[in-house]
Image (cartoon, rainbow, N blue to C red; front, side, top):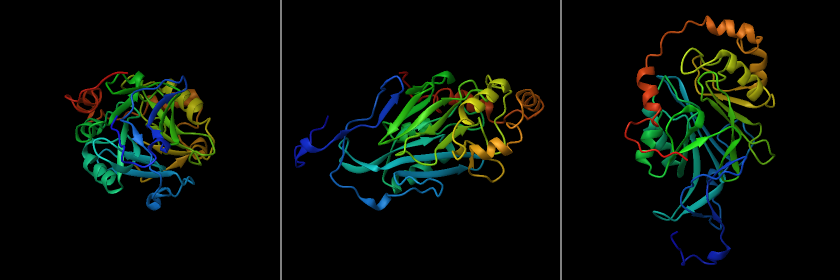
Length: 309
């Protein structure tokens, strides 16, 4: 740890670390120690999303048009922190969900403009339609941790299991197991407590799309499993929970659990009808799959070092 003896009343300052926690009290590797400043600048207060009432939340929904992929940036702006290594600076730690390699520079520019520090680059699953930006982010921002489900079989710095919680500041994302599109899909859901963003937010990957769902005919997909995942893990959330998918092809940005339970043309059906629908989708072979899947199985770059926890 870097000692900062020139700070007044050092012993009265709280040492903080972004934490990776689980429901089983599992703590995985964290970034270097931080010192919380005695004051908080309010220039970044307030959510950038008109849908969330939390004054703690900084939220951005970003779009990559070639693969129609959404990337999500989230931070707890109530926790500005002094990073003492490699240099002292005031910043806010963030998550980035489902980054895309082609828009890494855009994401980095936004992170720098807002004075943020990326801690966790997280994927909802091993994507087949684009290469994740996680590998590039790790090379450009040393210390970034790649995160994905253990069930994905992919390489990463941190592996998630159902019930895990990934925490930054006072906010956390709960991991829900939602396989079916692929064998390793997970959904990240904000917490249910009053001090968490309200209404809740679910980052569903390809498990639930707005008025649709991901295909189930490759990468260990199963229509039976996807139906059970959605109805047990997503449709059991409060109906006002905001659904933020990994993709959209029709110009939508957000839905709710209640809307999808009522209007989703596939997932509102009974299971057998759903399975029949999915077996007759007849989609073409994904044009990027032969490139994207092998790359995403190793964090997005063949030469990116990864470590299992």
